[in-house]
Each structure stands twice: as structure tokens, then as C-alpha cells.
Amino acid sequence: MKRRNAIWFIPAFVLALALPALASETKKDAAAEFDMHAAYVRYHFQDNDMDFTFGSVVLGSAANGGVEIGEAFATAAKIKDGDAASWQDEWHKMAQMAEARGEKSLKGGHKVSARQQLMRASNYYRVSLMAMLADDQRLAERGKKSRELMRKAGKLMDPPLEYFEVPFEGTMLPGFFRAAKADGKSRKTLLMLGGGETFAEDLIFYIMPQAIERGYNFITVDLPGQGNMPLQGKYFRADMWSPVMAAVDKVITRKEIDKKRLAVFGISAGGGFAPQAAEHDKRLKAVVVSSCVVDAQPLLATWSHIQKGTPAEMATWSTFHANTVKGMAGRWNVPPHNVPGLVTANKGFSFTPANITVPMLSVVGEGEYGGAEVQRQQKLCTEGSAKDNRKLVITPLSEGASNHCIMENRSLMAQEVFDWLDGVLK
Image (cartoon, rainbow, N blue to C red; front, side):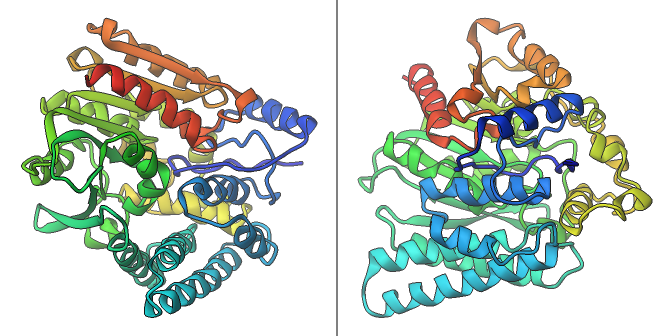
């Protein structure tokens, strides 16, 4: 069984059962040719990119209201393996059905049912954007629809999920804020940053309920390069700390935020954005990463799907895999015919661990930690000058917590993150 490498920095959650022998086979394949998005079980599809996305982005979001398992597998059963257009069409159909149900409940005054359906509809529209190229007009249309439905669902939450915008270099960065409670008291706050292919809504399904349950306010925002910001000419850049500081400027005056207990958590590429922001912005009092990206350029140079991403090679890939790789390049303003240019584009995307003076936690799945460069960067991250404030946690395959960003077991991930934050943000 030939495996395809998956593109980096996709938010990922996994909820599935698999035969031990199959997991063992997958693990051996990943070790032979390191792939940060290697899945350690087989979920449904033979195409590795599609299967990883299904098991991570889709199934994993069930714990936080992003998907119903029945809806997920009913949709998957209709998708042609590896075909991007089939994936996009079928998830769009499911999104429309969930939206219609949600609107019907809302019209009837059934707020809980409406909220649940509209949240899933928002997520399904978002999922239908996977492997969609920047020149496809549906990218903007469905992204807008996903956001509209999340804003509508957010008004039905208690406390409500509030939408806000951050002025930045002539445009607006969209974001969400939700208070832990509606009493106006100042509390610990988590600023959640995504990675190289995330939308702000993804982070809501990633960890917001776990934050609220533990008494943390929740904030997330689309940075340049994320969401549909590239459609406005805003791409990833070396100084990602700058838009993060702008987001902090926007929210820091809120009375619900305890300025002495503001933490930032970055996943995937956000594992570089978050500490880079803390290096420049002393208002951030703790940093969590999954996993730590001290220097993106050498990390990207180890990923064969980027090195091999020539037009001739990509012509042999599935459309889902090829479009995912091309889409990632576009977010760094790299032409789709020059995917290897991602390595050069990431020059300067780095931070100096010794400059991070606040506590920092790196949480990495056992499978992802199997990469030599990943290990090297975690060591650099945790052995800085303030190493007494540094901690590395490797979550195990045996507990279904091995993949990129540990998104297949968000309960275990959240336990590690918040138990640690509770200790450092007393």
C-alpha cells in the first residue's frame, strides 16, 4: 500500500478504531519516510491526505460539537477516494442539510437545537474548503458562509461567542471572544493561534469548550496567511508576532481579561507564532505550543512532500493531495508550481528560546516526535536560559494521542495544557 505524504499544519482530530496490525504497518511506513501528518491508524480512505483530514479535522471535532459521527460516515461513503472535487461537493451537501435543520429549529424558537446544527453546518462548510485552490471562487463564498453561521450560533451560546475585528495594515483580522462566565469578572484567558491552513473557527472546535469549562476566557483570530486572509493579499510572513500583538492590543482592555494571566497557545505553525509573539510582547504570561517550531526553514526542509513538489511529481498525486500542497504554498505567497520554494519562504520564521522569560510548555504526540528535526527543535525550545520554566510532554500512541498537534485526543491534550496552565497562572 503506497502512502502519500500529507501537507503540514492542518488542524487534526482523530476518533476511530483500527486493527493493531494496521497501526503498526502505518507506524513503520512513517518511520521510513518522516511525515508530520502520518496517521497511526487507518480511518476510512486509502488516500493518506484525505484519510488524515477525515480522521483529524472531521472526526476529532465531534468532542466539541463540530460533527456527528453518523453524518461524517454518511458523507464519507459518498466521496471518491483521493478526489478533491468529490470531497468538496459531498461536504457542501451535508453543510446545507445541517444549515436547513438549524434554521428550522431557530425559526421555531428551539435555541439549543439551532445552535448545535448551525455549529455543525459552519464546520461542514469549512471542511468543504479542504484541498480547494485560491482561484476557486467557492473558497470565499463558503468561508463567508461558515463564518456567518458560527456568528449566528455564537449568539445562542451562554455566555455568547462574540465576533470582533482587528485593524491591521489596512485590513481587518477576524476573531472571536468568549468569556468564561457572564459576570464581567476578570479571569485567566487563553489566546489560541492556529497554523498554516487553519481558520479561526477551527480553533473553536479544537479547544474552546475545554477552556470555558475550566474558567478560562477564550480568544482566537485569523492571522495573515490564515482563513481567507490570502484573498486580501495578507500572507504568512517572518514577523508573525506583529499581527499577534495587534490582536492583543484589541482585546487587552476588556474587563473580563486578567492582564496578569494571559496565555498564548499555538498549534502547528502556531508553535512558532506563539513563542515569537511572547518574545516581543511581555503581556503574554505563559506559552503553550504543539509542537515547538524554533526555526521553520530546517523543519520544512525535512519534509519530502515539499522537496518533491514539482509539477511533474504532483501530476502523479491524487487531486486532494496535490491541491493541499499547492494551497499551502499559496498561503506563503509561493507559486503552486514551486512548492519547494516554501523552504526559502520560511527563512527568518524563527525565535530565540533564550528570549522567552515566561513559562513555556511543549506538548507533542509520540508519532510526530519520531522525527529527528522535531526532536531537535523541542530540545532547543525546552533548554533555553529559563529552562526551569520549560516543560516537554510527549503523549503516547497507546492512548490514541500520537498525531500532529495531538488533535485526535483533545481531552488528553487539554488535560496536559490546562493542568499546567493552572499551575503557572495562579
